[in-house]
Image (cartoon, rainbow, N blue to C red; front, side, top):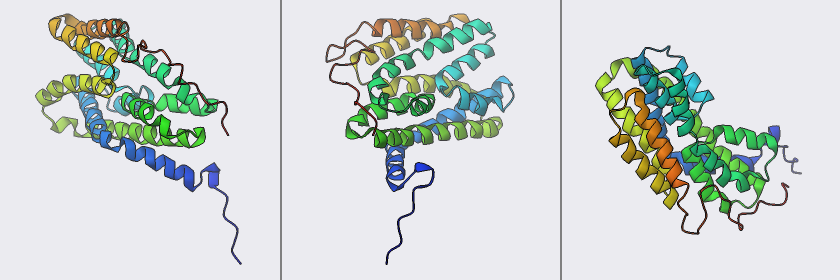
Length: 257
């Protein structure tokens, strides 16, 4: 006589765990970059002379490395706080485009899931989630897959930041500062370079940043981000959709079983 199957603890059964780890494997090739980027941010915190605990705290609350580095770099150059804040907000404006693209994918999820996954969303996890969503028509399995994509990626980012704080003093300052700035732009651009609007925004941003490199307080970054996002928003993709527009065929599922 066979014993009855045990009920899943906390509602997490073998299928949910399998979908979670499938998501983790999908994002795994991008994790080393997240660790290195986190280490660069943690090291920068040490260089600037801020309290070390601020690095993992910022990484776990802001969860947006490019804007975190932009704020610290602006403060390091003596920029007024308002310039640092506006620069970070402009850089993070790209997240609004991710939200529009992911809206039909997240629509069938319960509110608590939508809020949690939105909090964990990064450039890389947004790209992987968007590309893989069609393979997961069942919204329950899809949300566990996306949690596997997003959660571990943010975790290694936070751990990398903590490692950067610890290792920062043994890394030459010239390596830290020279490596962080190009890494910031690579992290922002590469995951999204799949459409003409993204390519346009990235190209224009880099060109403006280089042309205006002599502006004080890191204002070239702010100008580059603003110009790139603005011009990129006017460029249609291959299907004729503007950035942020939801194609008619991308309708959300009717319900969450």
